[in-house]
Length: 129
Image 1 (cartoon, one colour):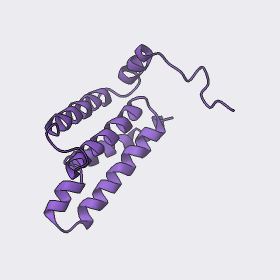
Image 2 (cartoon, rainbow, N blue to C red):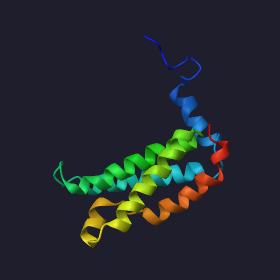
Image 3 (cartoon, rainbow, N blue to C red):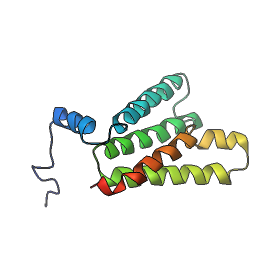
Image 4 (cartoon, rainbow, N blue to C red):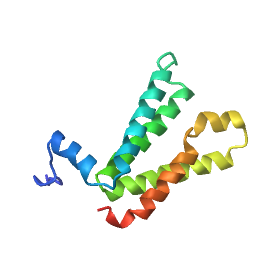
């Protein structure tokens, strides 16, 4: 079996945290903190909702956005492409769903802010590896 991870790809959690803070441009770690805070806020609001319910889609959106933004903070291209893809999917759903209740249930609540963050990603896309 071939191992795809080289020993140089593995970092300690402390080194990863330092890289997430020091490698990206100044604003990116603060946006990551905002994503983590919003993820915790959405998760705390779902503590009384039954698990296999439609309300949990908001948490799924936020997990995807947060993981991809952490990838962007590590200057990984997969993070930027993933964030752009999730935002395009969200925008497509927002504009194609006719009913306001469906829009509220199936799309992320931060769709305008996510578009602004996509501009940051596109501006720094050449720095991503």
